[in-house]
Image 1: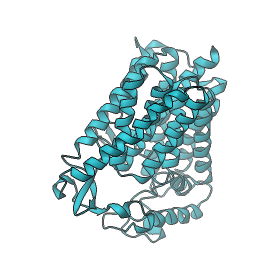
Image 2 (image 1 turned 60 degrees about the horizontal axis):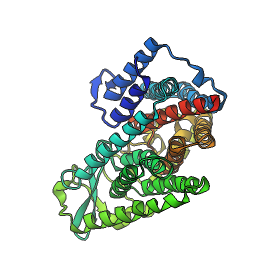
Image 3 (image 1 turned 180 degrees about the vertical axis):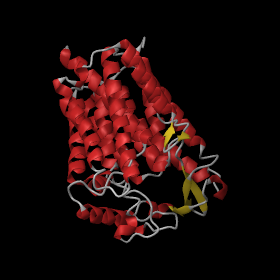
Image 4 (image 1 turned 45 degrees about the horizontal axis):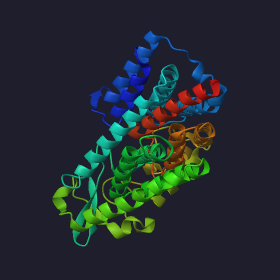
Length: 408
């Protein structure tokens, strides 16, 4: 109520730490409680809502609203109504986070506070993930007779950690190359890249390379080419650190939460993925099933949240998981309308952020969006609130900054 930007900063910090408690058909989490507190504070503060009507933000706001609408429409053909309703409410939560962050930041544009929140939570998540190299990791791969852990930190899994870092690493690199206080943010970016490599997520590596590449291009274009020498440690130091850990770490079966391990060399070969008896299946199989589901109702899909429940309908008996691709999942569950809404939102987010970028904040958000969009071709990440809601929080902060910049 007294300082709106503080609410936004708190949301960014608590997002990876759910502290979930079951409450009927849903869960009560720390981010949900913090979001409710931010909205209550804004109601009492009574700020202007003009940021949501600003011409520069209309395409992005329209995309956010469209995603809620298509999820709600998908309830009509859904077999499992509760799953479709749950996903609709999740989309509504994302929209609320986006709108609250945009209104709060436009009313109290304390960019330093936001950068401090990004720095603190990035350091926390990376340290908690790296600790799993010596304690317990959720999964791993064989390497020369040892099991190398795949770290996840407070996120649901290694791919989710990589998706989270797809958003944060370009922000840290943007601040190092385009902003003040270069070395602290360069060090944090190096830590983030190291953590991402140790998650052993192939698409996560691609996402970060794309996102950081966009920042490097922007830095060279606006006259910060000399600062590009700071990018060398971002590549060299993480590679040395990862090589040392993989070579000298005393890893073993006890380091895995579930004891399962695959071949590290095969990790980066899509054709080598094997079906396992835990409800999963290779990505090509899941993608084919998604397209078969899409053919059942190309307009509205089979219903949001229904993919994992209807896999037996297309011959995947014993498989219960999502499509491992945002775009295939959108086609299957929400049809052409949902797929179009996803593409519209991503394009609107990137163009809105980068077109108005005058500094590291909007550049980092836009580049992170590109990296995440690339990664989500191979993994479904915004399904998880720790990644999806963070993305919408950052877009909300960016929308607030865009409205302020165009007003000036």
